[in-house]
Structure formats: structure tokens, C-alpha cells
Image 1: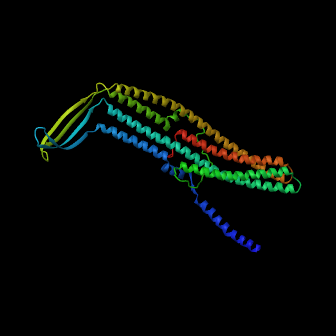
Image 2 (image 1 turned 180 degrees about the vertical axis):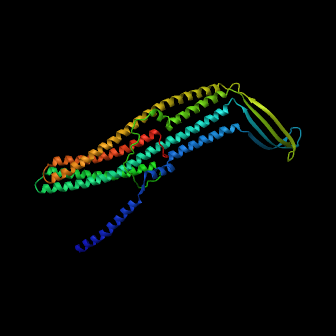
Image 3 (image 1 turned 90 degrees about the horizontal axis):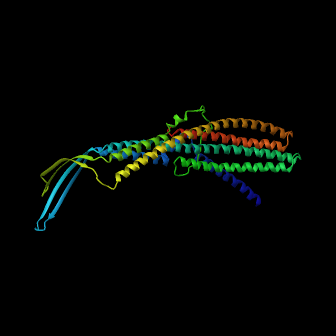
Length: 427
């Protein structure tokens, strides 16, 4: 009975393992694999920040169209029917009429042209704001891409380290059984193996978190497992010190501030122009009668001049507000220029340091791998102690991770540098 159950259990495990293997295989294939270019394409289409910035630009364009319409003729039409009755008679009188009126602005102290110029500058500001938003989205997307790329690579490294720690633990165990190693060394090797296995599990969880972050920056509403395909490579450009003052003038952030300042300048001119009278030419044509259709013609042609005499100092307050707005945008531009210049030099410096650090860490890794290879042979032959050997092994583990971190940091500082220059998803 017991033997038959064991046989049944053995044969039951085979389809179960096949089933689990199939599920794992399907889950791997379910992960989408994206290059950086594919991620950019998706983000440009889906990211809500870009949609918001684009709609803000559309609002600015519509506002200019509304403002420009004030220079065009304004034509209205009306159709009416009236029934009236006087107090002295019981008879009712019907009156039918229709009329078309039109007016044309002739002069308003150039207020409308200034309003149009202000609207144009606001369009420029919205356009540059879209580029700033695109630049910020690119930075966050690039960081999310690099972090997932690093998480994938870290999983491979931790699995490799765990396998190495397992082999080391087996070697120490054999020497312990042979009486050539003490128990403290065995326990240390087993602890190192447990640490390595924990880091493998941790790396897998971090991949899930990195996938979540990248899904967010892609503008997706639902989580989808994905992987990224890329290399930790840096194109060593901009290695020589640049003219950061000239470079700052072409950044969309500063261009946005300049456009806001110019819009405020035209706003102040428009507020001052409000003190001039408004002159309109007007005309009307219509017909009226007591029955339908009306047949008595009526028309008029004339001009009107309007100028408010007193309105509680409203126009003076408007001018004061517009002047304060101009002063504010001028200060914002100066502060923004200083910040952009500093940020450009700061991110450039960090980028150069990260490139050099990655190159140095590569040399350390080469040295650590060579030392570990020699130390492995020496420990197996009993030429060095466990303490000396494990120090070299630990150094190899930390150096592998440090080199990966240095590579990822170089890519992220490169992304910061591109964002500081105003690089967008279209670049």
C-alpha cells in the first residue's frame, strides 16, 4: 500500500512540474520587451502630462483667435414679433420686423493689436512649456528605463554571486569534514550563501517595482509586466567645458520665461491703451410692418465714440497690476537664467565625474576578478587561509555591484545633462 502511494506520488509530481514549468514559460513570454526608442514612442502618445501641456497650447491658440476676432466686422441679425394693446382701445396691434446690424472697430488706442501680440507671446510660452514638460517626462522615463535595466542586470549578478557562494560553501564544507577548516569558517560561508539568496529574492522584487515605475512613465493605466533591452553604454560627448551662458539661452525653460515677460510687456501696453476712446463705424438695415412679411425699409449709417469718464479708478488699478506683472516676469527671467546656467554646469560636472568613475570601477572589477580567480586556486590548495580568501571574495561581490551602480549612475547623470540642455522626447 505504502509503495503504491509512493509510486502514485512520484507519477503525480511529473505532470505537476510540467504544468508549473508551462505556467512559468507563459509568464516569461507574457512580458513585453521594449527598447528605449519604443518606450519614447509610447510615452509621447500616452503620457498625461504631455496631453495636458498640449491642451494648454490649444487653449492659447484659441485665445489668440478670440482676440483677433475683435478686429473683424461684428454682424448681428434680429427677427421680432410684437403684439401691443393701448389703454384706450381694445384693439391689438401686431408688429413684425427684422434687422441686420454691423459695426467695425476703427480705433481703440491700439489696445486690440497689443492684446493680439500678447496672445502670440502666450502661444510661444505654451509651446515652450510643452517642450519643458516633454523634457521632464523624458528625464523620468529615462530614469525608469535605466532603473529597470539595472534591476534586470542586478538579478543576473546576484544569481551569479549566489551560485558562487554555493560553490564556496561546498568547498569549505569539504575542507571542514576533512578537518582542514574550523566550524566558524563553515558558518560564515553558509551565512554568505544565505545573504546571496536573500539578495536574489530582493532583486526579483525590485524588478517588479521598477516595472511599475516604467509603466507609470509610459502613461499606461494598467500594470503590464515588461522588460527593457539596452546596454550600459555612454557616448562620450560634451567632454570639453562648454559656454553655459550661451547654451542657457536656447533652453525651453528660459525661452518660456522670456515669452512670459514679453506677454506681460504687451499686457501693460494694452492696459495703458484702455485710456483712449473706442471708435466704431456702424450700420443697420431692416424692415418693419404690422403684417408679415414686413415691407417698410429702415437703414442707418453712423459712428460711435465711447470713453468711460469714471469707473472707480479701475483702469489705473489695471495698469498698476500689469506693471507689477511685468516686474515679476522680469525678475523670474533673471532668476531663471541664473538657475539654468548653474544647473547646466552642475549636471555637466556630475556627468563627467560619473563617466570617469565608471571607467575606474571597471578597472577595479578587472582586478577583483583576477584576484578572486587566483585566491580560489590558492585556498583550494591550502596556500591561503579562509579569512584571507573570504576578504577577496567579498571584495569581488561588492566590486561587481559597484561597477553596475557606476554604469547606471552614468546613464542617469547623462539623462540629467540632456534634460538640463532642454532635450525632449523628440530629440
